[in-house]
Image 1 (cartoon, helix red, strand yellow):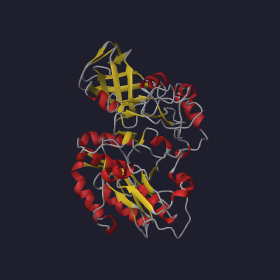
Image 2 (cartoon, helix red, strand yellow):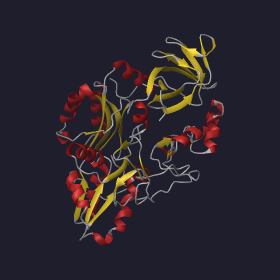
Image 3 (cartoon, one colour):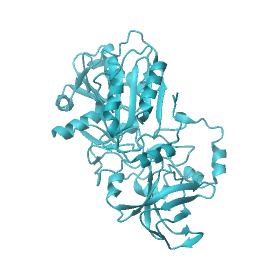
Image 4 (spheres, one colour):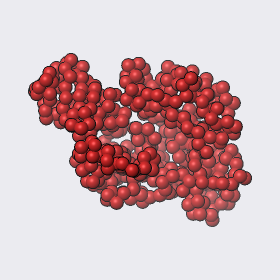
Length: 453
């Protein structure tokens, strides 16, 4: 009986390609008392693996928190697996604003002490005694009340690219840091102010609302379903958006645009920008904001040190990483001395610019044509191999290489090898190789940019 993921991201992406089915990205959570989280976890894995459901899920004695990708034609079957449990009957599923078949490429379900780490050790704290839920229009109405204080319970790298107008945006790395900070700031307002809070999907402010009620705050409200559900409601009902900018999301997309306002800037040059990048240096993976020009000049790196590192032979890069602690403790969220224009916690009062397009994926969507797919990457020589399937490829073409792990990389073809030697044009059916400074994966697609935006 299989209880854990056995496929790599590349293998899973290839299976998704072969299936040719649309998938839905969604999220949900529920606070409940779960006596045996390990048993609950195993039951979920068996049921969801059978449906080809993927995602990142945490379960604990206090409930479940899930971000997932499921085949669209299995939506009702998936919902039925939730209805088995009383505390998830009729649960709201937050469907993503922008859909992507590759948002998750593994099914990972982990048992944790808590589904949202809060740093609290108070046995009298009842997480189910939560604040009043508000729908989008109700939330907007309360925002207009001068007696309201609105708080963003997300992290600095999330609120930097998008937030509600007038919100307090704590300069924190994680949720547990924000609770004591906000509690201290608002001690004088327990009785006479409306405390209004929000987060991405609702799970963090659900716990926060219970915490502040526990601390003696009288009028506690939260945005039902978070920014994700708010966005769905304002679009369906034609409601004015009081949220400006992007909603940061925790999959490879790194953001869904809500309004065209750009409220942040490139951390390297200061240009208005709200596109996050993970540093290409595998020993760094710093999450930061990078414009297209800096992305091209720095090759997706956060510093000249990392840029130099990715050009070293692969075995030397591996040696440099030897002894480094891996996992989340390696990845830093947008704070580095190398970033000259990172102003964490110091957000502009007004947008810096209007976005010209919804995002780079949509910007290129109507101006590219599919050529082929990646087959291999020779890391020591930094040579990529592609199969030409749909259109010819010529020297001088500007191409886009796109994939769930690789992201979106633009390069200009300066030299092609096909059929055992150099050539000016590779034809359909040819296996071609050319030099690339970054790795490609089996799931990556090769496009020609017809018109550069």
